[in-house]
Length: 354
Ligand code: KG4
Ligand code: ZN
Image (cartoon, rainbow, N blue to C red; front, side, top):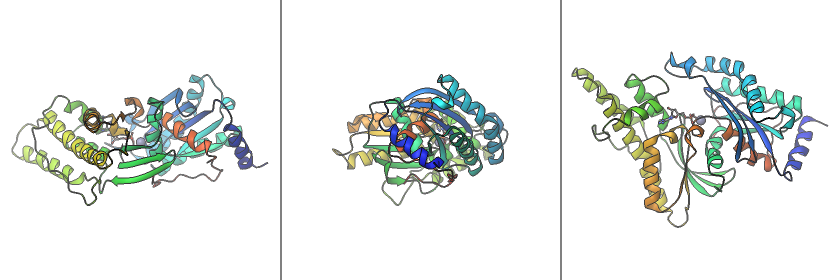
């Protein structure tokens, strides 16, 4: 029997099994991360090996260095995830790996690692969309959460408003016309001379600053629910240059707080408009992606959802940024629908959610 045929039969049998455990690997960017997840909801282990130290010197992720570091780390990280869950490879019901979007070399490292393991162990393999992973992080923090819900997806590469109609069924409502929110935070941080990754540093610095100290423009977009951050970024750069040209010391905390407020205002105003427009039909709101760790964004979204009378779901902070647990959760629902990969599974660097 071929590997694929054997996998199909196993995946079919798993639908009747009470506990399904998936070993998942994430290597789309600069984190080598693996986890064991039970029934899409329970974390048995979650190991994240960050490469930040390797990239910090260059002020951003260097793709070549990322691929190499994933290659060196992935066996060890996968082993550790299995060990911390008290299991061996043979105890797993299936394996999962991020197939895209992300850096092609980084993705390929993970995909090849898991293809090898799946073939050797004779286990079904699920290829997972990284963004679906971010959305699924909510299922780990909130075991009671079920679709449908609306979700604000904000990461280093995405600023999307989506409707999660069902597991694996997404509708795009709005997206950024230029930069992603995370990208904007990272660029603003660089202008302030903060090290990579800038988002969390701006966030921390902003806690001590005055968000009204500097006026930044409100972005204009074509679509009602679309985003734009490049104008905001340019205005911020001009403000900083203006201060520098006048020889003034940079009030970094005030600048960080003003920029953070402007980005979060843009993100939350569109989300609130959507909730208002769908009053009565949209009953739940969620957030996902690295930027959903932002303290101001979490506070402002909480206020929006209270005003609109809907509950807000957010992953706990460590599950907002890249991790293997979210990949294991997303994989479970794909596996239950029989969506498994064959050995031709490839990296898809530009994969979309919708
Ligand atoms: O989701 P993620 O870990 O990776 C991608 O899929 O892109 O998101 C990383 C992005 C980076 O741009 C990082 O600066 C940003 O999320 N980020 C934050 C915070 N934590 C991470 N941005 C603002 N505030 C934070 N607390
Ligand atoms: Zn991510």
